[in-house]
Image (tube, rainbow, N blue to C red):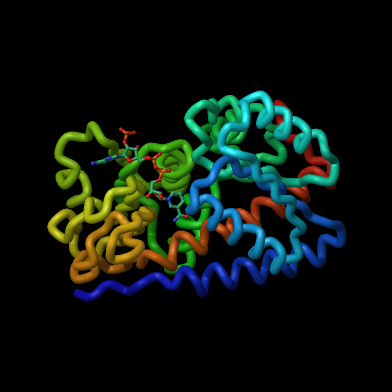
Length: 285
Ligand code: NDP
């Protein structure tokens, strides 16, 4: 069997065009502020893409870039300023932050109504309780792809590999909400393959090239590769290329989950603007 490859670029373009249309119809400025601390080249690249995509969708953006050695207190002050600024609808703090900064302190210090990355405890808690508002863009983009390709989730066996706050955990919650039977695997999971082999859907979000091999996949399964790994032969995911010979549906890396993440960030920013301007309060904010 040769897997159908998900065209994430085409779907992302469709989502972005819809957001652009909705931003124009909204009739008021929509603004995303990003905060980037340090010199990580990949982070600079990602933030650059986010600004370009925002501009194309008619979303204004503010670009705050701070030196690596910026004290935690200054970052907290900036986040507080952006939270209080009525002209800012969404705030995105690009992770990872330098080692001397407590990431969870920074994300939980922002106004949850503007937390377009969905990392504030209020937003994470809302997802857990089945009342989602801002959901992390990567798992949201995966759900949109699964919907577009008609993947049946109800009653299916889903295995998520990776339990980060930004991908693995929210991914598991979203799949559970769609009535999949979800197994969440991580670095201490004993015999990963034993879990993945029975899965109708595998989502790999680890950051290890070649972690998922063809013998770990049930023939015809859907395999979503979130991983981004820079190797000598270019950017690869967590899933071996020859998984395409057994999977039914597969996301190529690069060019699938990445573009969808940016598209869903724009969608979250518009959602944040709508909620704030239409006076829909976020509990706890
Ligand atoms: P984290 O490093 O925060 O989490 C990685 C997870 O993988 C952890 O839960 C860890 O387990 C688990 N893990 C590590 N080794 C193994 C193993 N051998 N077997 C099973 N599980 C393992 O990463 P992120 O969630 O932030 O990102 C994951 C990947 O996705 C990265 O490659 C990242 O670049 C990419 N990414 C891609 C995005 C996109 O838009 N395409 C967006 C965000 C991330 P434990 O908790 O036990 O340590």
